[in-house]
Image 1 (tube, one colour):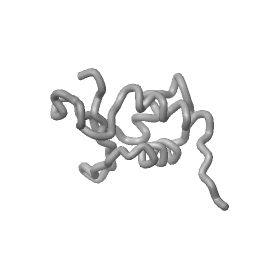
Image 2: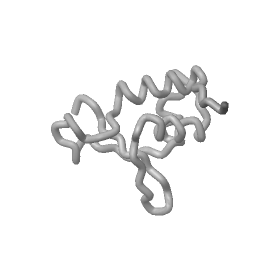
Image 3: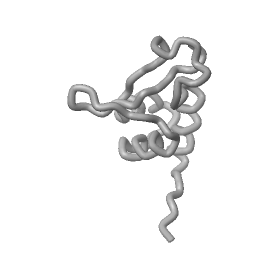
Length: 85
């Protein structure tokens, strides 16, 4: 039985991402204005003062939470809808 267990850093990351961003545009007033594109490395840097997950852990956490990604100019970006916009 190979069950995935999140580290404390990943749990903190998930909480912080869910507080700041939504995975879909549902309930967001102006989705075109609220959408942000971030790489896993940029998210790792954004939340560095609260947690220290690896880039691979950030990527896995984003997939676990249902965020969609898009390739752009050879780089993979997560689509994040900023809450409170």
